Length: 511
Image (cartoon, rainbow, N blue to C red; front, top):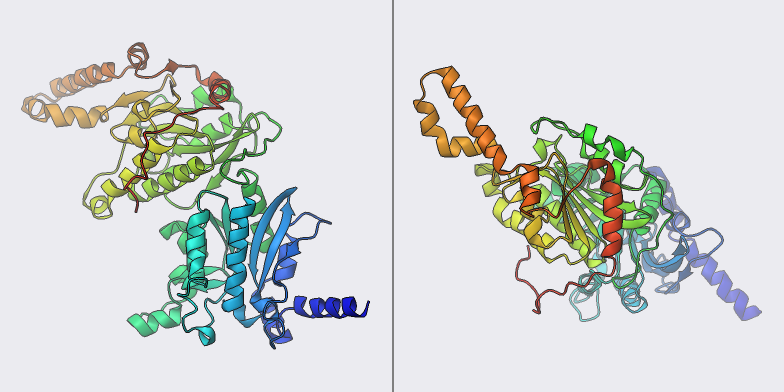
């Protein structure tokens, strides 16, 4: 027993983390000690298991080399984790710290389980620099492993403090990034380094705070207000994801929608230029309280997120008419492309709810790369070969319908609601483009208005929903109250879909 007791005593010492003064500082900031943080994630009475507890532990002030790593159960599903210990040298990454991260990543590849990165690290340990960051098996390989893991197993980052340089890349290499507001931040360089390099004086919040990344850069998928909420969001997010790309997402019991599906027709205004909230439409389709919006503060003209339909996970991509009319901007194109690509990677069926006048035009968006970034959205939708359904809710103008997986983009079904309109552009723009001179030549205002209305009616007749259905432009015109039931049946039909794309190594469209 003497040897066992000695090991137990050493383990207990190591688990205390860094010196007391660092624990006090942690509390003052409002952060939990890493081991208390882990208790929020894993199933009660089912301990997590560590790897590398004794790493660098015999060195003074370096217990576990500042990182806790191992496996645990979340809602009865195994997951790997890496969790920074801020009480040990501000969670900085030294040689053994980095090696523990690499080992967990490699274990996730072999074990085919999700991996969590609970990040509270100041970055690489400067006093241990040298060649460590570029050696073959070193800290620099973390991002290589991130890349290998991408699309194989879910990677979720949760940020608890300001992270700069290397540790700022870990969240953006992950599939999803959750940031705790007011304490989390990330940037290529710290405010101090920014001032030294550029002369600019800036604080962490402005440079790379949670709110900035949620609203401007799009690098934060979720912003939470507490560590408890961070754990809850992580666990909920995992419930929509498989263990690995060849696994099925666990099903949940089916429940009725939060909103009555019979009200869908009343929700969509008769006037095509009048807005409505697409979230209400989504809530009329998916299982009650199942919709989890992703990047909700970024590019709000497009809504993306996970929901359940008859207990099964789907990814939803929906234009939001109440924000910028549902027009697709460069930011929303990025948002859509990333979400579609992630769903396809993990074999999650896609539902597109199309109501868009198309892509935004003008000098500003051209300078921001609307063509290039719009192409990415179209590319992602084109190459996604999971079960995918396109519902033309109302407007489907121009190239907007391409990004939203319209008829030519191999959806398994294109459904039109009675309010659907498919055209190269809206009637006002089309008439002005073709008949501007003719209309201008009509001097009598009344006659001009009558001619305009006649041309408008003629143009609309070309994309009448009954004509589109009759010409098989869409597969079916359905009554809105049956939309949910139709989708459940159609997804069930294509559950075992096989649609191999032509063989190649990979496409060249990436940025």
